Image (cartoon, rainbow, N blue to C red; front, side, top):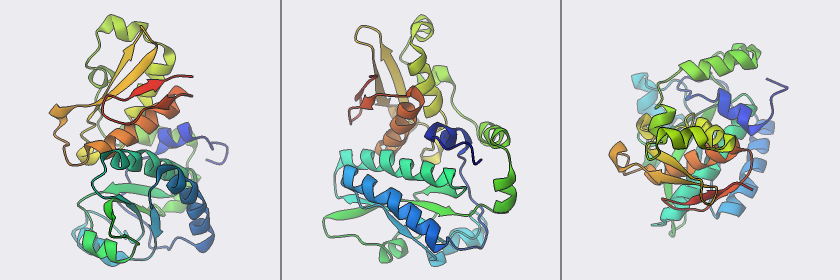
Length: 261
């Protein structure tokens, strides 16, 4: 894994990790993660925090076998009643997830598989903020074996670890001739978004390309049934698309445009 240090590499190997080794995140790794979070929080006006060694937050999920040895998490904290902030939280917290992936750590976005009240006790949440979601983080089970795997082996594990919607489903608003004619950057962006995590693996984001002005757009698919976490999932998918496209920038919001520049 050492020679693969780009965010697109992290997209290509990241999987949802539910089982962890019973080994703490050491202070040096924690400092590196904090150094990643600080500028992201500043840019995004969020308060994403690393919380270590709090297994009570995941006691029920660990006891049921849904998770194993989950004890650390990123607390995704942001302004109350702010839809754009929820989208930014998905975008920038996933950026931290990809950085953690490149360090050999495992991650899992969680909405229901934790004790939210217990989680809130161990992070800073002001009266004007709320705890949106969490990301379990830690050393994957048998992590030394994991770190010894080649990049190609990890890519194959990512490809086969879950089902995904097809490219055609992700671009349901386009005709086949429009897909065929779309530029390589758009196709690469959609392919990267296909690997993005989402609540209940619903993958609720659709992409379209407009040849008239050479822009892409991202829309929440109301048929996906992801009304609770759709904005967060929209932000995650937009980040993956942007990395896959290689360059460019999104406008926030459902229907926001991507300019490739």
